[in-house]
Image (tube, rainbow, N blue to C red; front, side, top):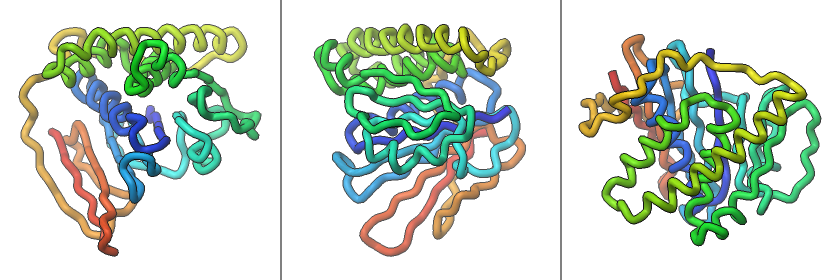
Length: 252
């Protein structure tokens, strides 16, 4: 089974961090294959930013596709630009604090979360991405919540003062997502994913596994992985030069 997620918003909203946390949590604590593929606009803060996360039981042939099972949008431009990518029956997660456009499709599920308002209530707009990650995990349950939080905790280990706020933000989003899930199940059963193979101990290794780095010119939508690959990280950068490069880390 394969699940495709796209996260889109402005630079500075933590879009990439949300995708990375999800990908690393899945990679470090499950036997699934995972890809994370970021895409940046010309500006980092205030410009466009989006990323793709693919989680699959089988080998992943491409780190991004034309159709998404889930779409997280943090602003109106992202909604208008990427809504067509969502498959019929897919789930749209929107930051309802900012996204005010009408949803023009009736063949998808919509989860609204005022993450900007909730983040401001906690005292920092910087945790809106953590709240949205909690909403996504609570609703889809694609990865156990404790696994995702352990990854966040590990990543913020050098800044322990940030942990209480981020934990509060994640739990707030998680609760909201679970409530939305219960409402959805009352009308239309969701796909349930087998999580029996997840490790509940040794959640995150402190030392990184050695990776093989490959560079390819002219980044494309395909990045083949060997059968032994556990995790593919593919990213592109588009500097002022006309050429673009992609690089792939293959974790075995």
